[in-house]
Image (cartoon, rainbow, N blue to C red):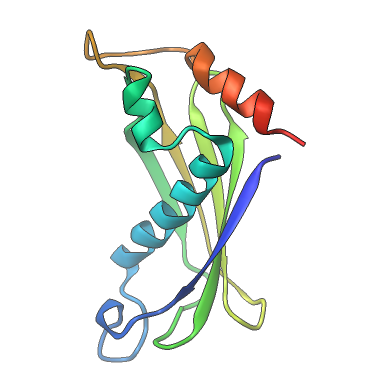
Length: 135
């Protein structure tokens, strides 16, 4: 499995009056980790666009077993779990003490930009990039 982890210090503007991260900001944290993972694969958003494909998120699931709070450093790990028909990424967020705070998944599908049609299998360029990035 190909994974990438990023550390994020929770900023004040992401928390509510109880110093807990507002639930909607977790999607931003997942995006940050996803970008690091895509860079590691060598197929980030600019490279996707250059290859003629867009990869919109079509599904997002998040579970919040614990809160992230202002000032703590969280670790967001993104792991590629499926790539043949869709790009599915699993996420885990842990606090600085290693306690799991969040689990999530996103599903992205390839859209051929020349025709604006969804592809029902991943384009060869993604498969090649993943194969080259695997240890």
